[in-house]
Length: 504
Image (cartoon, rainbow, N blue to C red; front, side):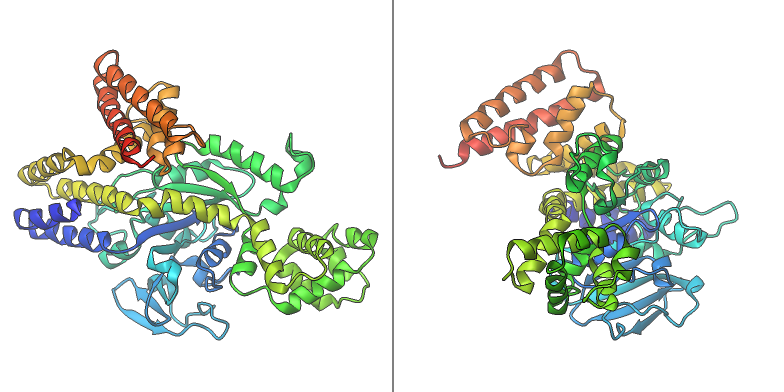
């Protein structure tokens, strides 16, 4: 990779401290993409983490671990490592239920974070970082999350003490991408947290390149409160997600509805054949009786019926009322449905697959570009922090040479996208939207704003827009806009070239 070569080449030309920073950048370039799952307290972050990993390992009840940053990464042996602020590590086994132990048996005020290693295929391509919730009453937990997101400064204060030690900073600071969890109301501090998100300890804000959001607990939305929902919960959640996307853009690429609890139960083995059998029993109840029971959790568990109250409570904890209603409908439509098919039906109803697909498009397919852009931001920040003007200039010149190469165009496009998304380069609204669309998608049809169009149509449109942006760069654009326009022109030209070279 060109960025890795740049770091190797520069290490001998910079101070020992800067060179050590470059070594950390190289390590990160070779590691899986680091995605932080962040959001307000009780937004269901840990439940969503479990669903994404496909295993119930992150504690979801309030306890010691939910107040700490936890990194879930691939390992050949399942284990938990407590990392202390002084760099010490203590290894623990997972609890008997497969989760991180609820009580760690240590003074958590001296704990930096937790490393959880899992023999899990998902984690071979992505490290998932579970964070304490913003808005928590626990100031220390909020501080850990804000440090991860870059919302707190990471320099020395006037008394010369570090706010976060180097071991902790290297381990938890600088996730390269963020999955931000919101519930029905987007609050001011949600936007502030996204605005403050930093990648690789450099000042690189969240944007459509490296951030998406999910509207969790979609099943709790009252459809009658959302115009146009026609009484349908999922339609209401989709409409609300679109509204929140317009509020949070350009900080995020998209907002998708999801029901984390159902997704976790369906994906992590929580839904069993015994649960399927209990749902069959519920499906046999008179419809009026069942509809009355499903009015509230209290009525559902206290109503007198043949299904034991304890069994109903277990279903409620795994699926909530919406999931139970969906599963009963599936059983009634297909009485012979298997437990596996019922689980897949619940997974479909959770919206998790759409989230995974978007993660794949925004993050996984572009992981190298995201990491490279974050790495360049880190290299720039390290050189700036050195205090040596000559060192800063050498690094700057080397980066400019790198970015001038054709193979570095993706980095140029990500840079242009970040400038526009952050407002650093002011563009007319329609042109900003076009830059965001071209830079935020991996699919050519989506990039060109013509999903479903045939190849000749796409090629003609790409060439037409390439010419338009070249003209705009030369006539009428400000110097800053012109730099962005040249990058967008090049992006369209490369798309046109790629379409022409594809076999008919």
